[in-house]
View 1 (cartoon, rainbow, N blue to C red):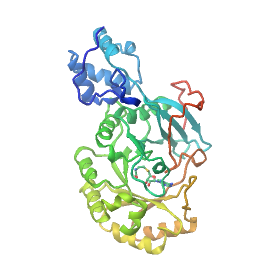
View 2: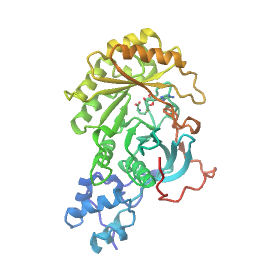
View 3: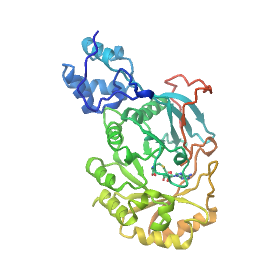
View 4: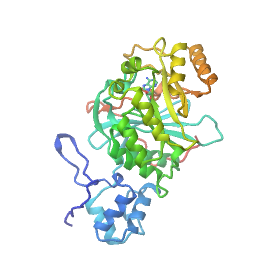
Length: 385
Ligand code: SAH
């Protein structure tokens, strides 16, 4: 059958090395509206797009033949002109604490990492999925392992949502929380991020409530404003320093968007809704940002902004000179913030023995000389987390 052309700008074929493109657009790149537009462009009623979207995301079906409520004609058209292509699971590392890291291989052989972190309360099957948004990262934060590999490319919407797709198949249900805290800067991949968020939140797909999805940013200020216009997910900001001089050094994007513009952008994001707050991530670096003076500056900086501070013990990686603050200093820092009225938590490091902890995700450019272990058979049985 002849290949028909699909007149949708967001249905681009995935680029492959050497400028080649896969022949077929990937349906994982489409949100509900995109699926409806696609089937309409193929001459069918829009409700078929809803069914198609549900088959892919809610039921995890990749085979058009199995989509029994689509007409045979539509199934044939889809089969002949498109594909549903989640990333390939190349490697998997389970950790003793239940954390599980997956290496996902993309169509061009690039690799990104995704981490599933079960909640520590055994009776509750809740979990958090940490998702990557780019291959590598351009922002060069001085304490982050991903920064060391530089920036390679943005993930497509299908490559972002494909991580959630896989985790959902593995769990048997969608993850309870999704955090964009894997590799990359989500707000530097804005349009693809927004499409992926729309799929995550869709009732026909992963049904993630706004409080259950968190976008973490190093502070791309214009895109914090843009996000406020189109999305209501939770916002976390990698602050890490309470003054510009130190933040310029730790999070270099601060030179472009300093604190005096970052803080108002975050206030604007949470708006007037009393229950919303900004989560500020603050990595505890020994002798760098963890003194009583830093705590005082932080308290002053966040005055008047509804906030939650999340202190993250630094996770070391080969080649980094930083050390994590001693636990007494983390506790003292936390207590100062709490005494001032700031809601403060300390993040428990999970999965560090499999390098799955914050800032340790590095992915890998495909090394054809080395054999990766065989991927697990999918879907695997549902397991309790
Ligand atoms: N680019 C986004 C999201 C990715 S990083 C951002 O900057 O927010 C997710 C979180 O892990 C960020 O707060 C980041 O600053 C933190 N992080 C990075 N490297 C770390 C490390 N080695 N130890 C602890 N946290 C780290």
